[in-house]
Every structure is written in C-alpha cells, then in structure tokens.
Image: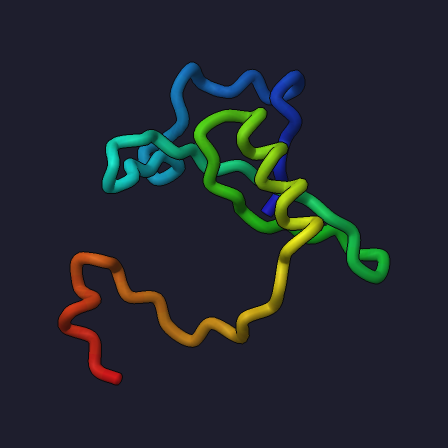
Length: 86
C-alpha cells in the first residue's frame, strides 16, 4: 500500500466509508496509516483513531506497549461472530 502525503494528494473532505467506523458508544473513528522501516523495506500498519492527534498518541502507546499476539488466519465480521465454527 502506498500512502500519499496529504499536502500532495489533496484528499477529499471526508474519507470513504470503509475508512470510518462507529464505536458501540457512538464515537467516530478514522483509519490512519503508520509507516515504518524494517530491514531496508518500508512497511505499514493501520491505526483507528478519532483524530490525527489521537492517532499520534496511539502510535506512542504502540511504541511503548506493542506485542505480537500471533498470525491471523481468518476474519469474521462481528455480525457473524456468533455463527463462527471453532
């Protein structure tokens, strides 16, 4: 995935719907891209946050507390989680 800096890309006034999420308590979250270097290769991960400043705070939290939980094998939408077969 290539991220184009805001100053160059002139993004639309609102993100596409797949980059916006609503929390159960009604807060709006937006998807932000975080880029890092790994052994000479540029990589990125997504962070969901309420604002750019919130995304920066979450990045700082990641730097201090991140852990690897394991490989992801399947994604089940929350609406289908009760139907999942273990």
